[in-house]
Length: 199
Image (cartoon, rainbow, N blue to C red; front, top):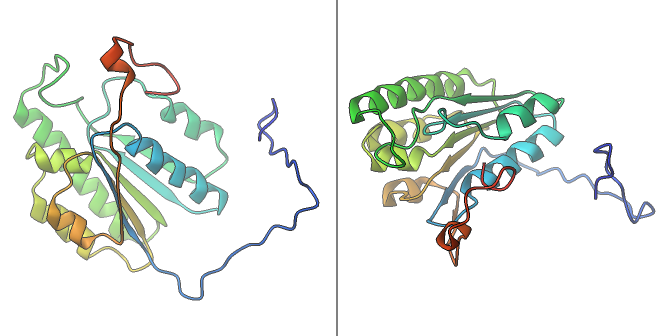
């Protein structure tokens, strides 16, 4: 648990900590999908863990960009090599979003080009494509484009793809797939999104 200064407070300081090192390093493909809350939050948890290991991270947000979200400020406070790039024009076709589909697609194609550059540079240990599954589903990017990214990534680069509606083809390519299932959600009770929990 952390105290008020954000330092780690160990309740069992006499406990010996083991630093695991895999015999063989592998760059994993992780898919976080489903209709429940927590896909981006899970990816951000991996970003924080990677930070703790001194890894270089890039997160591209394919939908977010029009509404402030806490992770933008949080990464500035971490002493880590983390880059978050919100490239989206908001959620296409919902929540009163004013932009037509071609504008969303153009933004998503730009994001895909940035993703390709970051991934192929070989400089990043972890790349997160946040809401990329939604972008495929909404035809903002083509499934073939994303399959190409996944198949041609550097061997040691971890790649995380989030968003509902992950296609069978993307799931088939993944090493790890988690589906977040909604049991209930505060918005169904008329509760507005809350800072620090929802954004």
